[in-house]
Length: 157
Image (cartoon, rainbow, N blue to C red; front, side, top):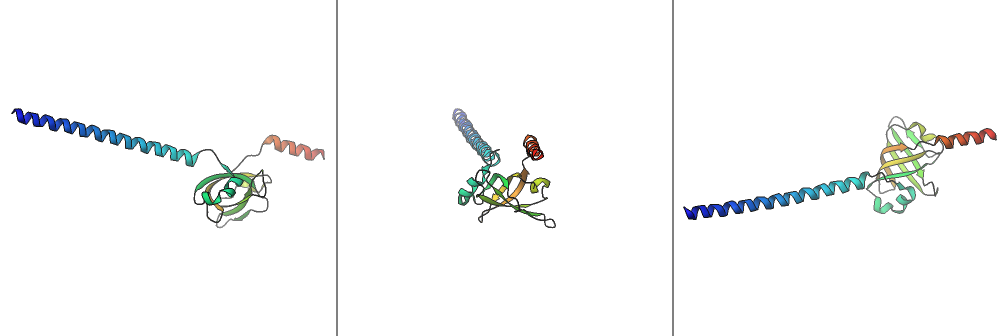
């Protein structure tokens, strides 16, 4: 009986060691997965957005990737097909109006997009041809103070 109990003790100790190793490896795998998911979420959904100049300069690198870009809506570039809900327009970099980026958005046209001086934040993916296929379109609210000053100046003239 002594031999049998010694063999059983060895088997039990080996079994405990195997369970501990499996637990440690499983914990490491879960921890790495959590770190990956957090870093991926931060990279793709941060509040940061790129300028039109940055996107134009890095077009080859950003092609096919999701991005968020901000720029001023170019007056006269807006075309909208109400039947197909297809909105196409261009945005320009506020610091360099020569840098343009074409935007294609499928959805309802925002009311204020035709307003002069509209600024847009667009989320979507950059196609190989340089057009941003937008899945989200937000317009920045103009400052009431600036609008008031503009009206005041026009009234004086």
